[in-house]
Length: 162
Image: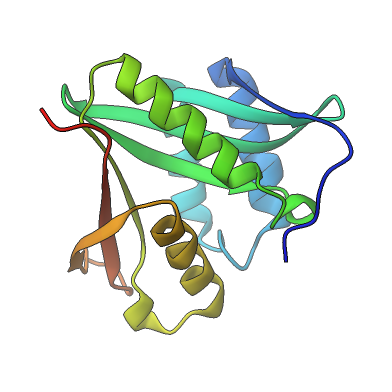
């Protein structure tokens, strides 16, 4: 059940330095989602080349969405996380709404995301999959990257018809 927050959640564009620090802070508090240190290091560094949005609540950054534009007509959620005490409070939805609006302004027709496939029977990532589904993302295909233990699902949300 989603509980209401007393203060307004503000989403804003932030610098790569702030985003990388926030990504590290969130990652440390969510080992059940981000338990592969090598992958985490790649995210911490990769964020420097992305467009980053943070959710701020009561003067504290509590969520991050890092967005990339791999093609002129597509944006992709590179990384997203919310501090555990702020889960199920609408912050992830607000970040995705902001990223979708920003993507539309940049002329993209779709937004994509990759997450652990529901076939992997991981409770935490199943919640993540359901979250993206509730926001209008649809699965396109499953893929098991080379030298990777888990199967991933690639999902898309159409923002506008070209």
